[in-house]
Image (cartoon, rainbow, N blue to C red):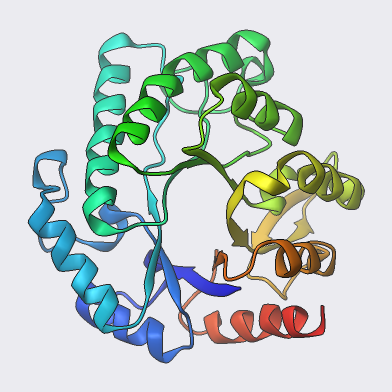
Length: 278
């Protein structure tokens, strides 16, 4: 596997320097949310030109890093038609950019049926799922036209909240350009974390063949709430996930989350040790 990092979790310096640090720390790829990493110039839709994409691609190549994920985490279930159109246009701009950039996938979570993008029980309704599928469909079609993969990330408090619903989205849209980012910790909450092994097994069974990227973090329980922490600092059973990925997904990108510059290397070494022993 190729282990990477969210670039906005790395040291806060211009991207040219940031990539050098990430490479020196031992990472081989990165998950990039442009607006969280780049402040010295515009990353508006109109700024995402082929030339800019190719400049970033050269930077990554010079540092021997893969551009694993171009993050575009916007709410495709927004019920406001004007806001939704703007959101879909932004996805399409990022997809065009990814085509010239050579990004592995354009990554997204799966939203909520409100303009605030916040959890409500309606997230788990059939109506919300169908709304998300309807609004995702033209984005996936555009990805097909541009030769780009788009990958959805199931999250327990979003519309695609479990492996069963994720499988339904894949099957109903039925596109080779629609993939999965698997973040197994994001499938857990305070009410189900004790069943983590069952949930992981279900995710691998239903989604394994379509997983394009793995997100790697951990969790602890504090004040009766589930809190995300760097891998190696919590109680997630990574030894249940890594063997499958090692066998079935050679050289797949796996990006760490929720690290800080002073603990990223320790987290990387922890997951690499599980990988070596799997």
